[in-house]
Image 1: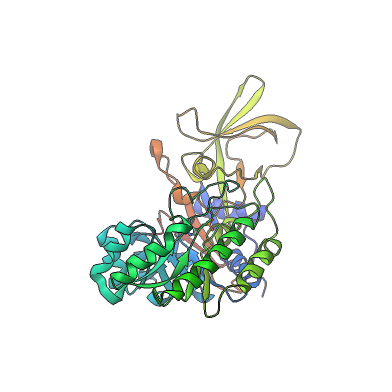
Image 2: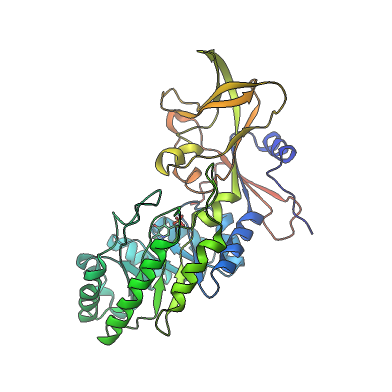
Length: 393
Ligand SMILES: *Cc1c(COP(=O)(O)O)cnc(C)c1O
């Protein structure tokens, strides 16, 4: 049975008629196919979906059905998967800096694997004895990545063994190492370098018997097409697989993809509220903008492909602006669009990751309504609306 494509213009119009505007249309069929594509590109690697780019129940359900795991960083994320009945054995807690209550909440749910990258954080786990095991997060700088997360978290590879010794002294089981080279990487070089460095760490730490040392977490970062296309996932993963093949024996490998799973699986639909001609350009004011679903243009530095559903008429130089009274709230300038009027629809593609998740309701413009489509494999356009749903509720 073929699922209905909710990203086609007639379906988009139908959903806006039914659920209003602005919308974030999440296509579970695409979540599923992205997850499967990455799984095929990384055979033998257990994928844990990192919730933060789109912490929504519909996505969690698809990953559950696909047999995937979850990478959680906060008590809110723990509560979301817990409420949906995810088995805690499928989850790891990967925030390198935790409050005691975050650790307690995760342990109470049944999560046993945590991440630390410094001595204070390792010591925080001491009181839980054998209930909590550790992955030590190592950092590898990634100047090429859109967002270099290695600056904020992770210890120097040279300090990792000392950290493992500290954990072992405190009676905490070191399961292995983790890294996250940054998001939307342009090539696999940092992953490959990091895997090689971790392979050496496993050998050194096993030599001193500093723990079970049976897990390597290679983080996320897998890129998707925006206005700029990304490297094909099979091409990107081939050298990563080759590097993983050289790991010592008995190391289970997990990855924490976020963006790759959900980015292409959602579109944002906004409506023109009004327009004005300024300096020879048409300015169109939408009901969603930089403080809403397009927040990723600021925080995530992403440039989304945007288009008008109206395709008729001559193309004119145009500006798309968000609804708030703030002058920074401009989505795109120097676009060529047909002449639009109030009520026309604008679609942003590849908008599942780091968009709605970081949107605010500045100026009291509500966040986009999430509409979930193709929830089950073979659903024929089955639609579920989550009006006002925050994903965390
Ligand atoms: C955000 C994050 C991820 C997901 O990264 P993507 O680039 O979206 O794949 C994975 N691991 C950690 C630790 C993160 O903070």
